[in-house]
Image (cartoon, rainbow, N blue to C red):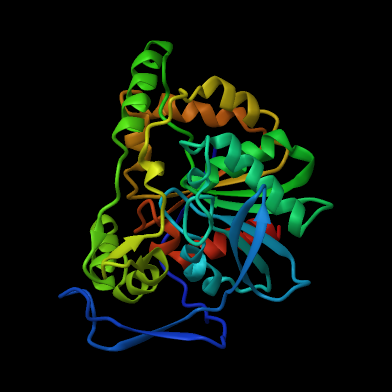
Amino acid sequence: MPRLAIALAYNLPGKTNDRSIILSRRFRSGRGTGSTMTISETSRSEFITLRGLRTHVRHWGRDGAPKLFMLHGWMDVAASFQFLVDALSHEWHVIAMDWRGFGETDWSTRYPGTESYWFGDYVADLEALVDHYQPEGQVDLLGHSMGANLVCIYAGVRPQRVRRVVDLEGFGMTRTHPGQAPGRLAKWLDELRERPQLRTYASQREVAERLQKTNPRLRDDRAAFLAAHWSRQDADGQWALLADPAHKMINPQLYRIDEIMAIWAQVTAPVLHVEGRDSPTLARLAHKEPIPEFRERFRAFRDFREATVDDAGHMIHHDQPEAVARLTEAFLLA
């Protein structure tokens, strides 16, 4: 399968906006320039009910423009796509929801009988989102990480509904074997007794620094922008992440790659898979499986195209949004 290397960077103009967030680039020594950067928040928020949950949806662009659905990754929020949207050169109506339990969307675990989060629910939420905004015809889907895995699953179970798929750093999960099942279920039961928690931060600046610790390439202005959407001040004055701690719980069900590949084999839409050249995610997910063997799973797709973006890690749409935008539009508009 051909691979395309994209070097940084394109300086595409951003879009105008009625709301601007002025952010200082002084968060970390050696990274800022001492100047003030402006990131324009061009999205508008809407709350709708999807499958009984109050769901937060962000929109960029005008109604009537070609729709592009963007789905964020684990422990992320829809606002994460702001920099990618800014880099798009064509007119789009971008629609991005906060997945259940993330961002401004309700937590399903607040209701009796729900303890964890399941891929099946995410896929059903995605279908509800697509049906709400584009009930007929085919849709274009872009996902990052967990969101990429989910759009690829949806494209396999509803192939007639999907025109094209952009998969940013979506690899599937680590291969499992049946012998792991007893320990996996036991660990989940243990976590029900002692539930995981998410730490809080003394300031929004600390949240930004936490983001930059995870991704050293993240610019100061972008880190501050994301921190403002990734956290909220609680009653104790601490900054809490906008995520349900239940997302930290282990999934009691094993990830069965053979089943996932059977779903991928039903995808009729062309799939563009984009990786960051410096991303550690592939090696981490491959675990003990040699990477060439791990990549064999992608042969399940009928039309699978690959691209690699230089000077980018797992958060590829933060590190090189211009390169990702260029690849995305060339693929979607071909």
